[in-house]
Image (cartoon, rainbow, N blue to C red; front, side):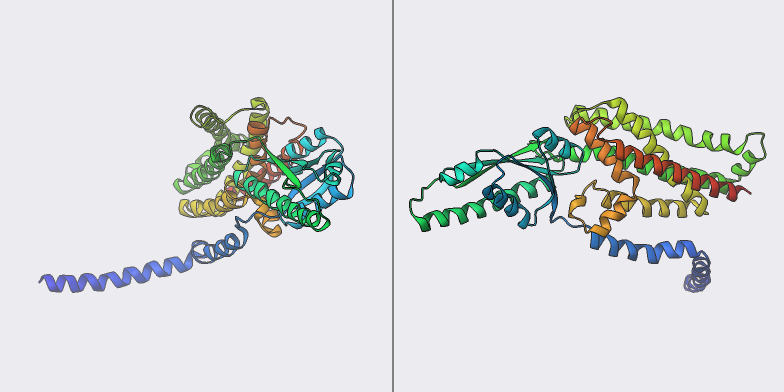
Length: 382
């Protein structure tokens, strides 16, 4: 009898299996997310994620104004580690360029550089590096030293050829890392955790909460009440803003206590710009809720949005190492700009004048995403 029951059970299994395959085929959105989206992500991330840092933007303060100083600048550029983005007139301008992210390094060549080269003495120059990203700064410092050594070897060979060469190195490049002189990874990762957690919470929880209400039918019950739709949506979204601020405060406090993450800038400015980022992330979650029909779909779409945020925003991998199309794609992610705000305020201590562009871009994201989401959300309620 047991053998007969087992055979019948197997026969009952196949109709159930066939029914699930039919249901999966009818749910085209889920089928697309299970097949096409992983393939697209593999191709995108495999192409975009690179750890070999090249073409770091660099400004030059050339106080020597000589052929020898131009030769040093050219040696830095031809190494492919640096990309010259301009010249500055003062050390303050060089610092401003690095603070605002216009440049990741500043080469300072003093006035006596060409005179030391001509006297066959050791000529000294300085490289100021934004070390907030340890991986990118390590590549910059090692690349600069190799370029200086190669140029020094060339000058030494010329001196030997003309006679009277000394054992002193022709060039000494002094590298000074800024903002993270110890090159601790925690100073780079912990501020990014704030942005990643806010992205996950605001996007995932918002989208699934609204879809869950639609599945249970409670959303339709709220619609027939005297509450207007604007108040309904604000009542849904404002609590998540408070949750985001609580998460942000907890991470910043623990990061400061356990990982010694500094707070060099204004916390008021950071919290003000965080509000714009939170609203933009809520707009993404609301937009996902207008597309997804089930909580499973909402979770899958949320993760499809979060993976590019984590991998293309500069949270883990330096954006300067990515191909240019991937950098452009990362520019359309709110987290990319908010990470600049976090690291700028916490590590560099910059003010609103240096973060004006990031704040404006985040404001555009917030307005556009919320407007599109509200419009689509209103249609789904009709």
